[in-house]
Image (cartoon, rainbow, N blue to C red; front, side, top):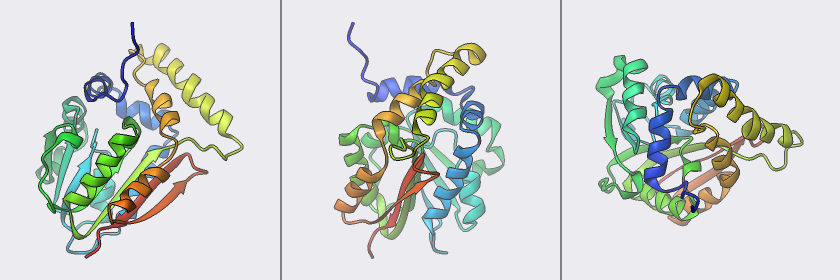
Length: 240
């Protein structure tokens, strides 16, 4: 039997639909809280202007960036969440976001196939979705980002990365590749879906190449790394 294509949209959707019940707790505990820190830093990278009030959260997942986004930038009145997994969104709205539901509009869709209107957003944000794409999909995402942003609009992406130059990288990889699957196996009794995090992250590397792709579309871009390269991101703007 041939191995599945782990970047196929249907495969990705099924993984995250199965993970939905335990995703928030698992990601927070097993990242030692760093995922929340990095989400906050991603929201800060947007550097919104007062007139930047509505935009997209691509690969929105459980919407855990929304509290950081709305606290940092209170002028935001509307977040259009796009995600291929409706299971993730439904759990998020029920557990976390009932009080801000009036600001959230959900679109269940493969973001790369979505017909989002041109220049329809003042910002684009995305946290921890890049690793589920391969390079040719990253290129399409970069073009989509440029297309949907209005002139002067801002964007910020962040993703768990492989810190190849960090002297503690072997310990970090051991945590992702060995510890996390065992936690899932013995404590969550899952289908080993969370173990995919390590494989996706290793394949992804970091956001440097995605930053180049965004720059190639004409966007102003800045590449950043966090905590010795365990996360990387890119932010910037569309020229006016």
